[in-house]
Each structure stands twice: as structure tokens, then as C-alpha cells.
Image (cartoon, rainbow, N blue to C red; front, side, top):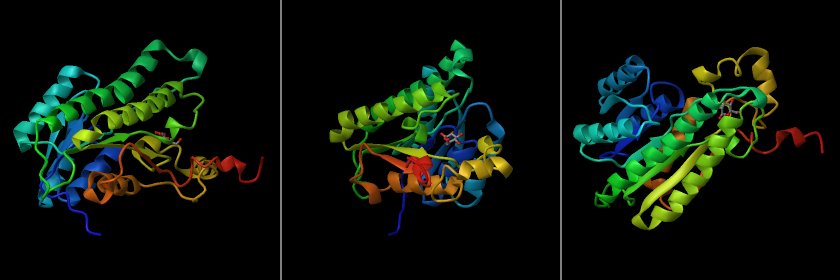
Length: 266
Ligand code: BGC
């Protein structure tokens, strides 16, 4: 099966590094014009846009804080100025502010919920509003638009020391499924990706040396994931190859969510 996203425009939030950057590259390689949203790091975002352009693709870097309503409006308006329409949103921006529960500050709670959950609400709402103004172009895609939420295995696996993060991802699950239930009849397709442990800059400590060995005990498939594992799934979910997939979470986790500690116990 050949996947082409030619003629489609995608926004990827939090795309200056990690999974967002991987998603932007994958979508661009499949022919989509890509908006590389960044919050605080313009240089890597602009560099990535340039790489995509040099390889014959279309890309632009746009700064915006996804937890800020005006910034999100600006992100979508600048996308329309640059490319004239929107077909795909990858709501990827997310962060962690870890602390033991009793020590967790309200500020760290709010920051994580604002970016990981409210940010996904604001971006998905802006995307649905834009999709509603556009006609379906059946020669390009059977859907009016596609939204892919970046969740985590921690939408189902509780995570001590990270309650703000786990709560935000649990929220993303019902946010995604409720939106999907509501907008499906407009032919807007909404799904989530739930990655496990992926080798990105943010996870360097957990994915090298002794820490990696310990981490592998939690991964039945026996390897840490790569950004491309996630990007490939995003490209598929954004394409008509998955046209009947709606309201689903795709776990890209090497089996981390299979209760691996039960392999030799219970
Ligand atoms: C987190 C990673 C973590 C993984 C598995 C992800 O959502 O961002 O830091 O390694 O879940 O626990």
C-alpha cells in the first residue's frame, strides 16, 4: 500500500524536537505541507523546515504556546495565510513536571494540565472550526479533516511521581473519544497515539545504560521505541489507509501496556 498525503496541509504542535519533529518529517516525506509549531525553540524548528524545503517539500515554522487561546488562533491564521487550508492536526505538544504527590505544587499541576490537556482542546477546537469551513476533496482524502492526539501509555497506566502527567493523558483519552463521537458525522476523523518509551532527547536518561536495562523489563517486545515508530503510525492515521479508524487509541509501546510484570508472577 502506497501512502500519499500530497495536497494536504498538516499542523504538528511541539515539533521542534522529539516525537513532533519525527511526525513533521514523516508527514512531509509523504507529501504533506507541514507547519512546524514550536514554543520556545525557534532555531531547531526553522532548521527542520529548511531541511524539508531542501528535500523538495513544503514547510514553515510558526511559534505559539498551545495553552494560550490567542496564540492558537494566530497559529491557525498563519497556517491559512501560508498554505490556504488545513487537513491534518497532530496535537503533540506535551511536557512533564514530575514530583512526589505530596510535594507537587499547584503551579506544576496547572502547567502540565494547561499544555497537555487544555492545549489539545484549543488546537482540536480550532481544527474542527476550520475543517467545517472546507469542502471534502474526495480526490485528496475521504475525510473532511483528521485530528491525531498525542497521548501516552499513561492514559491507562497509573504513574507514581507523575500524577499531573497521567491525569492529563487520561483526560486526552476522553477528550479524543468525546470529540470523535460528536464530529464524526461531519467526516472529521479523530484518533490518538499512545507511545510508550521512545528514544527521544527528553528520555535520554531513561533510555541509556543501566536505566535502559531496567526499562526493558517493562517492554515485552524487548526494545526501546524510535521516533520513526511513532511517525509511521501518525502518517497511517492521517491517511485514507485508516479511513474507517475513528475514536481509537493506537498504542505504539512494544507491549508496555500488557502488564509485563505479570510475565513471571501472579
Ligand atoms: C513519557 C516517557 C515515558 C513513557 C513510558 C511517556 O508518555 O513521556 O517519559 O518513558 O511514557 O513510561
